[in-house]
Amino acid sequence: MTQRSKPSPPDLDALREGIDSVDTRLLALLAERADLVAEIAEAKRRTGKLTVDPERENLLLQKVLDKGAGRFPREAILAVFRAIMSASVSLQSGVSVAYLGPAGTFSHHAARTLFGYAPRYVETATIEGVFDAVSKGSAHYGVVPFENSTEGSIASAIEGLLEGELKIRREVVIAIEHCLMGHAASLSDIERVYSHPQALAQCRDWLHRNVPRAQLVQTHSTAAAAREARGDLAGSAIASAIASEIHGLPILAERIQDHHQNETRFVMIAREDGRPTGDDKTTLAFAIRDDRSRGSLRRTLTLIEDAGVNLTRIESRPHRGDAWRYVFVIDVEGHRDDERVANAIAELEQSCDFVDVLGSYPRYPR
Image (cartoon, rainbow, N blue to C red; front, side):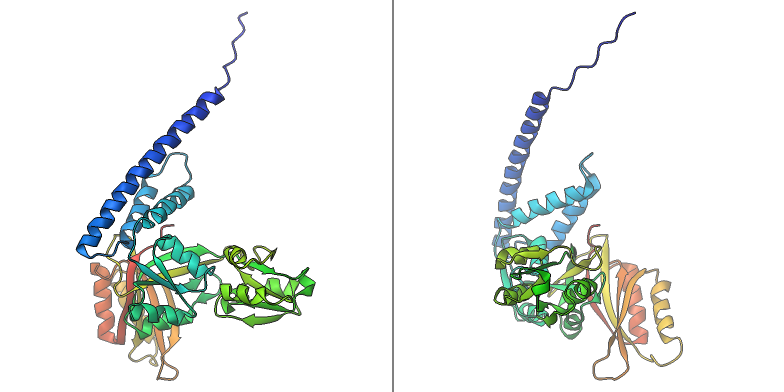
């Protein structure tokens, strides 16, 4: 009986040489891409255009996701190409971006995700300051938190959009992972916990279980909380791991948020909203003319449904200057220039006190 020969094992050295060869080709392609980016930036400078085009970048991300890369994970494709685009932005200049500072906030992280390292970043002490910077022209764009998956919308961001002429131009969703940091030897030595009200709320149960006697001190940002804790030996801060590095604070506990599927939706604000891409969202605000009559909200929302537009989010805000009346803020699928959305807006304008388009923008890739 003839014995079958066993297949020879793979030649690891040859496979590793193959990977080295692929890496060399990747580097050459990155260099070629960088040259093209530099040429595009120069062409934009000659015509006076801003060197960063958020909508173009979003379309590129969607294209590479649609193409795929065989066994290479979809999430990794997104991360790799975001890093490539971020590095490409570093070859360009002339763009300024305002964000809720100081450095190390999640808003800072969101701004870096959207724009990379090249723009001139403008720190502001408040969300209102971000709107002010863009309105007055000291920054081309702003990045503000808009909605958290566990705590809901950010009131000051919505109010800024309702009060001014700025629009949402793009959105990005950032996973929020909170750390407790400080110089205390143990959790039992902590007397104060500094952080932004949203971060404190997102860690409410963890704080109650682990530092029940600590005073909770609100700050205007998580990075500001880290700065406060740096000079308080009995204090600690809830902030990002980036803030820990920047401020030199040891991390005492990681991932302390009560819900681990905790994400924040950030929006880029600008004087103009985004161009249609074919996969867009529109945020609208409106006040019902006769909101005290029975079924008035239902009838108003039916106008959107009858126009063939899908409503994905709704919330109410107090109507300033008119007690116990409300402004409704909604998200719908589609761009305001799309026929169905435009028809829905026209119908709302006929039956509401006011309708304000807060922005049409590309849907964040998921």
